[in-house]
Amino acid sequence: MKELIKKVVETYGPAGSEAQIRELIRSEIAPYVDEMRVDALGNLIALKRGGGKKLMLAAHMDEIGIIVTHIDKNGFLRFFPVGGLSPLTLIGNRVMFENGTLGVVGAEKLEAQKDLSLNKLFIDIGAASKTEAEVKVGIGDVACMSREFVDLGTRLVAKAMDDRIACAILIEALKAVREPTYDIYAVFTTQEEVGLRGARVAAYDITPDLGIAIDVTRTGDTPESITMDVSLGKGPTVKIRDSSLLCTPSVRKFMEEVAQQNSIMYQLEVLEAGGTDAGAIQLTKGGIPAGVMSIPCRYIHTASEMVDYSDVQNGVKLLVGIMETEFKG
Ligand code: CO
Ligand code: ZN
Image 1 (cartoon, protein in one colour):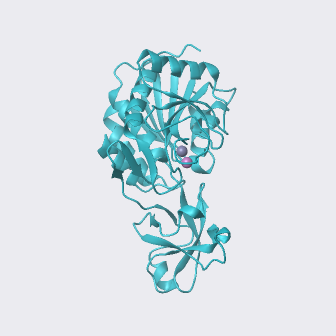
Image 2 (spheres, helix red, strand yellow):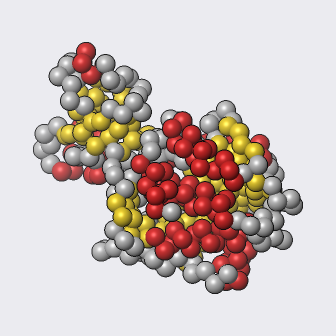
Image 3 (cartoon, helix red, strand yellow):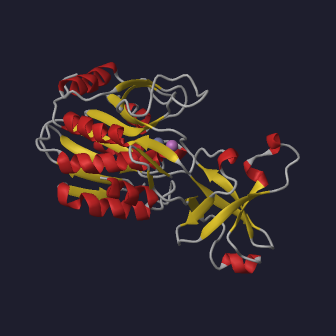
């Protein structure tokens, strides 16, 4: 599975520019689903028929990035964030445009560290003039972080673990499921990082009986970290709340029972800040029962997001268990 993870995390795909990652996922899942289509928002909607209720599983394939706002006469690019991006994580980092152009993030001279903000930063693509830069990059072009996948053994590090690790888990679960008890709508959603937009229209279109998002969540296990009862290596989480939803109690209970019945280690998650596609799914039409399985992740929204491989493997098991267990709530 590590090879699949390497491929999906390294592929380009900021919010609104998901074509490359969508094509990769499409080719990975084609042998394992009955139907596939792409909607107007770019969501990849795959159906695996098992009969019964409609289960929507959402993993967002977009990642955070930057969009070019200005190119100066010396060829330096100014930019605006696509999704939640902190200037603290950017200096010295590299970004990659859709056509493969690489750039380095530099900073203006700052009087004090507190003056560091995104508008003091620029991107240097190695061009000596505006004309030279414009051969490779134009206004409105979007880039993601550029960083190689690293396998530290148990811990895996990459850009875009948020949320490609969930894409990889959903792909593996589609391969592994033997007796699905639902018509499973596996949706690789777009534009999550800019406001859960892809999931919103996909859920409206599908009108599932049950919706579960798969995403990453923060942890409380690093030096002087936030207070949070989630750690790397203690299993995927069953979410209780985040800023986008209060998970439907019957869904949370169902997910916990599936974990217990299959002896899968899991953690309960209360996330103070941040949202997930489940927030959009839950508020569709007259309301949809919704929950979230999260993979604990350190350094979210940096170029070096870290997950634990055992959590990933247990995440696949829990997702397969969900696919094979009827939700009666
Ligand atoms: Co995110
Ligand atoms: Zn995410």
